[in-house]
Image (tube, rainbow, N blue to C red; front, side, top):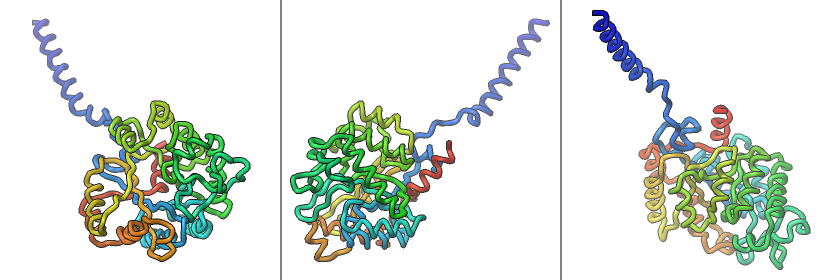
Length: 329
């Protein structure tokens, strides 16, 4: 009789334990965040986007377009090319509007034929960064071939310091033409400078093999060394990064944007574009003027706004990202 009672008691205890486990385990066992959006506290399984205006400061036309978007809160952020002819008024505007999310588009190339710029730092300190005309090289491979990582670090620090000297506090730093992703040594410098200043870079999480493969196919030298460097980076990262597609017509460009957004993975993505208002001067600078003019219209378009609302897109910017990141520490 005793043995039967003991067995029954044990069976009852076992059933009770299983019941308690089934009731409490969902609360006690927390699911690991699937991406950086979730790590930062955004809802699970959602697309969190930043529409980011590049090339601010390149010319007055870019400044006008970006300010218009930022004033209307139709885009989330922008970045200034410090060495360019129209950078100073853009930096001064950013200093006067500290709540607006404006960063620096760290610039080491000067790609146009006749509209050129060179280093902020002393050329004698960065000889590998300049071509025979004492301007930045036209293309990224030329920078990689001629400049040292030390020279790159000298110049990008000088660009940050110039912005700070006029009262601007950059919300983030990124890289014009992807130059700072042009070699493993440049990546190390880029992320080191970001950490030293406490200013987030547009650093892409490379722990996802699909993301690595995407950027390798795009021509970026994503080596094991780069992946390891990114893994050690201590500030928040993006899950994905892309740009507004080109189109032969405005309507085609808009439709390509829609398809891009629909195809994005869940997580935190930055989408860059290059808005400028139409002028004869812009047309004299770049053959891409028509794409830039359309991009100055795109995010004011009611059709685009309705699409993004219907897709239930969540928007953020680097200021919000850093606040969330610091609150999670």
